[in-house]
Image (cartoon, rainbow, N blue to C red; front, top):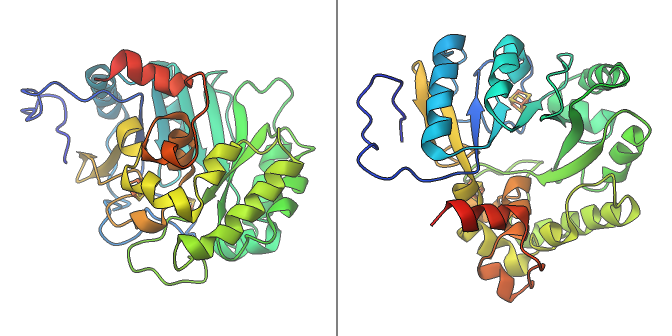
Amino acid sequence: MRLPLLGDHDRLSREPPPRFPAAMINVTNRCNLSCKHCFVYTDGNPNDPSDDIPDDALLVEVERIRDRHGLYAMLWMGGEPMIRWRLLERGVKLFSRNIITTNGTVPLRDFGRDVTYVVSLDGPEDLNDRVRGEGVFQRVRKNLLALPPGFSPTVQIQCVVTRLNQHRLEELVVAFTDTPVNGLAFTFHVPSVGEESELAWRDVVERESAVDAALAVKGKYPHFVWNSRRALELMRPATARLVTGACPALRTVLPLYVEAGRFTSPKCCYGNNADCDRCGAWVVFSHAAQLEGPWDAVVPPHKPPSLLAQWFAQHAP
Ligand code: SF4
Ligand code: SF4
């Protein structure tokens, strides 16, 4: 679904616009890294590095989409979004909540308390650098240790769990518990359809040992690891495909990529070619843990309803 820029004929205007609590936007298709597991730079996704929308035009369009879909939160992504930090500095003022997903090699800036930085690190130094590039772990660690006292945004590490690092998750946690980082979340590798690699499990049955590993680390560091136990439990084979088959992220996050100088909306946040049957995205399972769905029959829901469930009760039919 391509979304027209301001002034174009809007073919969706005849229909009531769907409401989303959040959207994600790739503010640039440029990145200073080339990670092995990157879903952005796979075939079938809009990812031409020369495709940027100028700051003013992009912000006008983001504001229009915010009002049209009732967004209160924005996930600023890329490429590497901090390459365009001046744009982000203005953009975060448009939303009550902002999440900036960054590779952490570009110094973080204090954009205020309504911002959470999600900094990607995928295991202890040797495994992280095998996937993200030589020297990346230390560059990111140096930037995080240099955060000044009183830095307002929340800083969270996000670790992509893969077949490669699943046995060494605790080492990453231990490396950051005594730093300005506020917490860490595990997200599990989302392979492309047909992907066979050293990172991807064949299926959710093979992946279950990694879920066990993450649960064990959650048990030892319950406050630092932000995945809920329920979200991790939902990744087990008995429920994983009940969740991804009714993917909650399709209801909660409007995905916006950039193609040919305008916004386009791919299948989901993970682009057009992600394998739903093996998807382990945190956004999917954390939202499933907070919303009703067919998985509730297997893993009973929490009471009272989550804030996300209350948002849908108030804003979406
Ligand atoms: S830093 Fe992010 S966008 Fe850049 S190559 Fe790595 S995974 Fe892809
Ligand atoms: S690949 Fe995309 S649509 Fe499929 S379950 Fe994951 S987030 Fe949802």
